[in-house]
Amino acid sequence: MDAAERFAHHFASTRFEDLPPALVEFTRQQVLDLLGVAVAGIGQPGPKQLAELVTEWGGRGESSVIGGARKAPAPDAAQVNATLAHARDYDDVHERAVMHPGIVSIVPALALAERAATAFSGRDLITAVALGTDMICRLGLATRPGVSPIQTGWHFTTLYGYPTAALTAGRVLGLDAQHLTHAFGIAYHQCSGNGQCVTDGALTKRLGPGMAVRGGVVAALLSQKGVTGARQSLEGEQGLFKVYHRGEYDRDALTDGLGIRWEGLNVTLKPYPCCRGVHASIDAALALRHHVPVDALRLREIVITTGAANHKLLCTPFDAKVRPRNPVDAQFSIPWGVVTALRHGRVGMEHFGAAAVADEATLALAAKVRTEVDATLSSARGVEPARVTLVFADGTQASERVDLAAGSPGQPLSWAQCVDKFTDCLGVAGAAAPARAGEAVALVAELERLPDVRPLIELFA
Picture 1 (tube, rainbow, N blue to C red):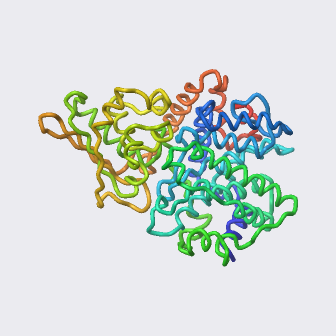
Picture 2 (picture 1 turned 135 degrees about the vertical axis):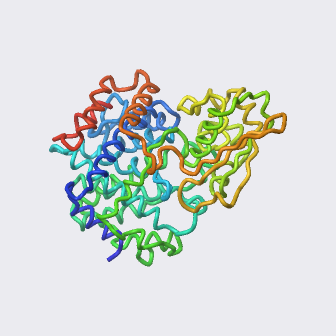
Picture 3 (picture 1 turned 180 degrees about the horizontal axis):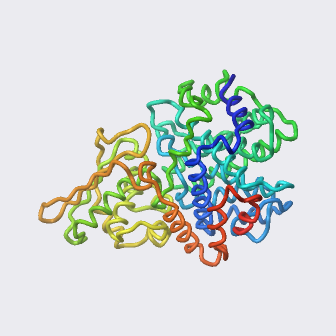
């Protein structure tokens, strides 16, 4: 049986009672986190223009657009909401699989739950999200073992977001295993998403996951109407792993312990609004600022040492990383994260906007950055360790190395920290934030006891 069919059967048969309590608890946090970062994306370049287009298109009001004045067809609403959630690069991440699972599992589930004619419970939502999160992470972990996803050229969240959104949406629609298999195949026919957008600082980085979510929702709806898709979408002769990855994948990582080992428990909720690969360097810079007086006039050089994969993605092209051309460049720049931490003593959403990347004082500090690669810090999977060294005018140095970045599964954010982050995200949105934020937190805290999740969704419209 092709792995795509195995996932389809797994989605069709899994019950809420099959989920470990720790996963239920994390999924609640994951939902709150996603809703917060999506609200923070309101008005940002990329989702702003997409929301305008969706309003122009019109159509039947099925699902809420976060921060929108009206409902839209479910695929349109899901696309906008996923794009909002990814705009700040503040959404959850699986470090070893190098992807953002919440956008492509939570967003389609909420859109189709609202579209449904009958109540869709919190338990059902948690189950659908847990299944989607687990599958997309497994797809990433199985791909080209020993090779960094950065080196493949694919943007895994978008690439694998299509089938993940399709099966998650299909679970909400109540599709059986056969129809879920077809939904997977229809989604596979659309799979795309590349990393060139990061190199070029393009807004399509923000748009990709929304395209995947839209494609997955449409795939599930087409399957429901009887459209067929390839059954051997992953391991067939022209399946995804053969066509996209030259047949190089790890089947054990893909399906071993399905329903027993849940990758959602290895997902990180981000403490900083930028690429997860920047976080260890930010932690090192914050630790230095805490222990060493950082006087910009006394600093001669800031040396940032990373592994090869992080250096390729987050330190090159060097000019764009020390003088970001736009907010996307800043979100994917280790030098920018480090100098922001050194200058402000914190790293928040306000440090990655258009005004921030034009700030002359921060740019002057960034001009002192030098980056280097240390092979001992390299890793094909996960967030690489980082070292930041401050070299002062008198020749003295201070150095800090971080191996485990804040927010990692080994030191996850608490519920209280998730609520603080949610509140901060809503504060950035200003007038666009939901007026009843406290009610939203209370509903998510009791998510598995909600008979219908639609009142929660409607708070964010």
